[in-house]
Length: 316
Ligand code: NAP
Ligand code: GFB
Image 1: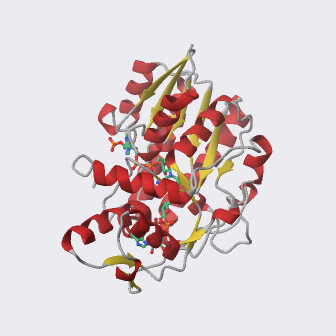
Image 2: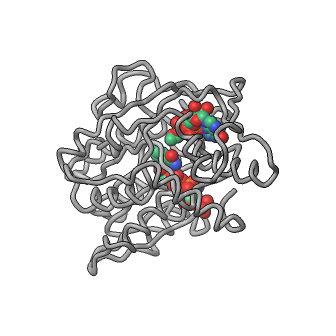
Image 3: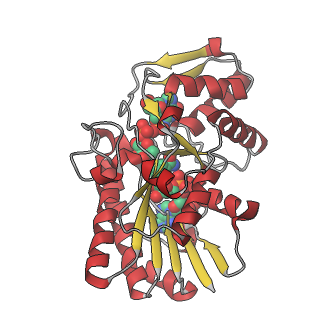
């Protein structure tokens, strides 16, 4: 029997894993435990040790992190660095101490060098400084890859990582100041509709992003835990052709919410962040050539509907 703990299991990605398990991916020989910060603060070593002692996991999906969109990252680079370094050090140290068979940790395509060639691939994580907007978060995440290789070299541990693109879906953090673009725009369109006001998209709308729907990522992370054999990371991304501009995204959110595109305005005094981080999913396609991603229009429609139906309870 495998006992899998999912750190940060109550967030966007944890809920995506839960949905994938509920929709056909569950197996009888696995028990899944989804943890939140209420189960213990993973930036504290003793609290982390107590969680591992209590659950005695055989496998870990490590999601817990200080997370935020562009604007939260720009404000708190030091906190992103310190908190995430502490969480990652504690979780991997306890995974080693409690003889966990396999750990899959979650990185992000924003950690790649800013000045680079495209498309980005898994070999390029450490090839230059990340974008200045989120250098704290990026360096902490890059170190997970270093830890994984060091644990493997010194102890033979099977600790690996996945690198998703921007993620969205139900149960996201819809806080307008702290969250990512899709949940931010969904919350803003809700308010704009209610108040009869314009919908303001921050920045110029020209940056390009690849977005993965949370349940698709959940399915891929379950696969990575069960099947992915490498220590080196794997990019979990939609195809390059599915990259969209932020202008496309705000229009899709407006359409899904029944809001006129003519009432969308752009606040170009706000930052754009990194222009693009186009990632190749060649490695993923080598392992899973037939994996079908949820089309972004469908994913956005589901996310908008979820927020409008769950407005009171949604994280905002
Ligand atoms: P999220 O919705 O904000 O969830 C974060 C989770 O981490 C929550 O369960 C939270 O618990 C937990 N957590 C935070 N600080 C903790 C602490 N000190 N101790 C214990 N638990 C803690 O984040 P997400 O979007 O699902 O992100 C999951 C992973 O994906 C993260 O590693 C993130 O860096 C990565 N990622 C996210 C994106 C994206 O676009 N969202 C893109 C690429 C990679 P509470 O609910 O109790 O606070
Ligand atoms: O989602 P987002 O914060 O992530 O922003 P990043 C993406 C783009 O959307 C930027 C624009 O060009 C923003 O200017 N944008 C437009 C908005 N309206 C909004 C809005 O209402 N909210 C937000 N947040 N953006 C983050 C990193 O960067 O990506 C994190 O800072 C993290 O570290 C995450 O890894 C995946 O892709 O720019």
